[in-house]
Image (cartoon, rainbow, N blue to C red; front, side, top):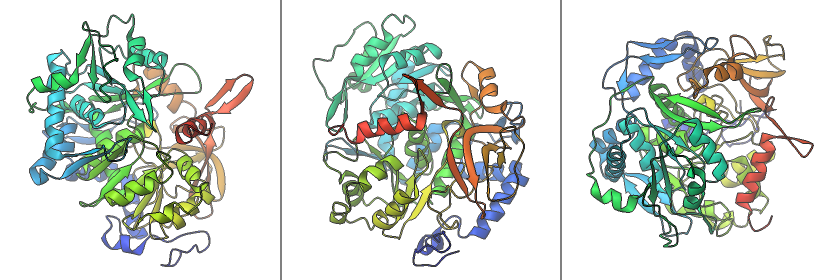
Length: 552
């Protein structure tokens, strides 16, 4: 399948032998055996992982019931647990002073580090502040915040008391935020006075004020101070100064016993038609899937410094900045800035300073940095890196090779991850110690993911060297359970195109070796000014405005 020098043989690059020695999945044969068991015996495969990797207040009676076709899937029946306990408390018992979060602020040198003990205390203070304001188990809380540690505190505090969080990316307009508040009937909103990104100041509180104007059901807006700008207006009727409020509450809050299928969070995603869909994820299945995909994809080890430089406002931030890494007890880095600020060496600088071992970014960023040449990257020591991840869209072979050869020096595994908001975690990805790599391919399905390639009529196309529409046959723990408040839309969008299958909405090619290549969206097309534009194009343009603000 390749050689140990990191050189392509027949289009494949071998796994990194040094990683394989200590990897959780050490070879392709082990992957194949585990994958086979995950499809043939999901009850015990996922049941074993759930009991080995999560702490439960009450053990579950059965791992899974329901089918994809009916949209009635449930995992870990009658089990009880708490997400924040699994992400914080149990790690405090083992290594209280270990750094949980490294915050890399927009301005170099202004960040901070939060230990697991500090994370527990801050999470509990936020949880107590919410309870004091009347937030109860099952209530929905909106979060419109920049990439500061407090966004993690709030998300984890919601899970601690059983509130359902709805994180809205802090780049969306007041109208977009307002629509999401109305859809989920959200009574509480968390924000900050302002945000910082790429040297720019973002008027977040001002945007929230416009969004909540006239919404009588919004009871409180909780405001953290990021810039401490005295000109940011506070409304004494509903606004709560969280800098002061945090001082009033004790750093202990008992964790709620949550049922495995209790709603954990809503995350809105755009569709081809209609209003944004509130993708709803439940507690145990989502947490386990985020944890296990993070553990195996990035081969997480106790001493890792793991950096996903996405935003918590997207599913990537939920699964692979907050919940996945923290459930595994590693150190996770939160990045407030952009790869181009103050110059295009920002990624390489933070990797060198923190000795980052696992790094996760988007192909658009990789391409933008590749276009700047290799001189800058040569100024930095990137030898700490072991795994380089790619997320958000298929990575083209040219960018893949640059990432592998220049950034990784042919010594790092490239984890090209394919997944969606709806899947909760990776569904197509290679494993560092086991799977040979192919540029442009997400390689093989993750455990429990039964890929099916169909024609446009839903007929399965078997064999290799084929192309069609990508579907999934069997349920997996991380799959979204519904569209919030509209289960019929969930069934129509994902379960009705091809009966008996979950429809990803993506086209794919399966090559002669059984490797998967995602070819693009089938269903999501925007029409503006007479032009048909795919959402991937819009996402790319957005990324460019973030990465190259002074050049557009």
